[in-house]
Image 1 (cartoon, rainbow, N blue to C red):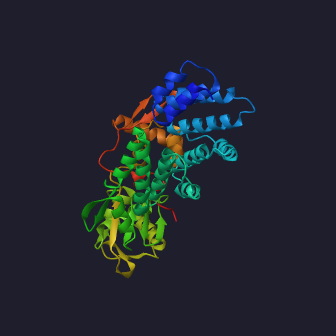
Image 2 (spheres, rainbow, N blue to C red):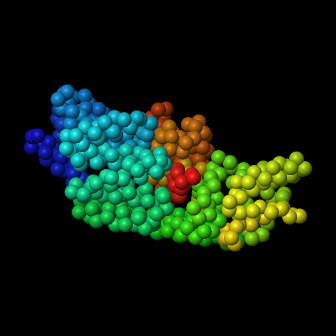
Image 3 (cartoon, rainbow, N blue to C red):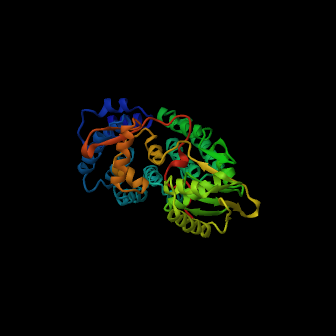
Length: 406
């Protein structure tokens, strides 16, 4: 490694992208291109960074397997920053194995952390947590330790384990303080600030109250019957009944929970569930069928009794009833939560993260753009979508798979 390459690498490790570019900007050899790509990525020039890494990987010879693996890792990180989530993770896994076999622990761990962050963006929390298990960042650079702890904190936050998240964020902050890299310090600070922001709203007996993440965790662990509008399901203790794929039943459950300890008359339930303002006997018959289905599903947690006016929710064991709703209203809250990270997302990446069809996401984005809540840049395949940060609260509970489905 020549002196300019070594100096550029040191500058990048310290977060000085411009300093690194000054040393390698006029060189076209593969090592210089690889470092130039990293510098451009740090400056936000992701397409040019990706091109530089691809060119560098092609330029390394067959005997330079380690260098090519490092380029694959760098390109994967750029793809993650561009929210290009559609690629196969096999190349990254193979690169991580090569790096580990060549005793490059730092870059091997970096590759695994990129894979974890991709899983988190896709909402695959359990897989991300399993991938983090066994990763040992001790003895490595403080920047890698900070990133590893940030990933562990996000897994804990999205699993509603706030004590574990707080501890991981404290370790991440300590490691980031050693690096003094501004971007890393800012990321840790933002994650810590999320703990103190409202994450949801609680509706109980007609009153509404803002909740932090730790308060949501305490409510879910209290044994109360909670109708969760963030993840569309009903929970009491360890029992979770998902209703995300049964929106009509969830609407009925929420209406009954919001009215508890009172009941809801049949016409109101028909209007909310079926959107019919002038119900007739066919609607009342359909309501009886849907209430029967909901009654069967929630039998382990509560009864649904009928009276002369309508129906009332009666939880078992004298439990309290509460409804947890997102901090922002609307059917597109999850979409806005993903866009709130300030990164430009493609429609395909949003569809992949949300588990919806690309056409459904496109329609939602067009409607949000008409309302002035999102904006697009570029066109055709290069089109990306942005939204202003949703200040004042955290969107953790709105992100895909924030709670287990079973």
